[in-house]
Length: 106
Image (cartoon, rainbow, N blue to C red; front, side, top):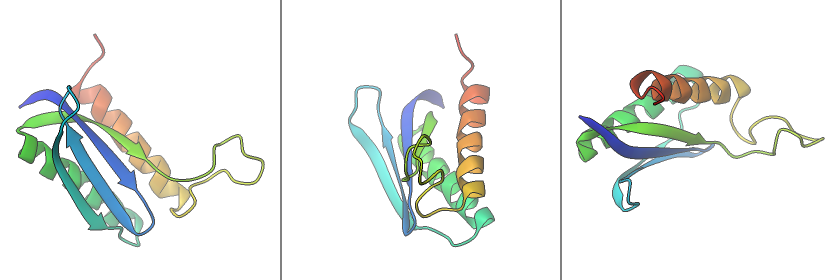
């Protein structure tokens, strides 16, 4: 597999949606699943979506995860609006680790 695909994950309270796009921008594939209610299942769902999109694209991809919520500097909120903080931290760490280990900086 090559590493020319970009994968975006939208981790919401009711659904997780993922899209794979080519470097030029056109959509290659898109998947959507209901958001599991527990931590381990949420991580498994994200990993499963990434695997499905990579297979559909025929290429490994870099991964970015978006999670709704207020900005960290907000005086009222510091976490995701609808996901527990441990899921948010682990999902971000998982994407960072995957991107840095499979695609080292030049």
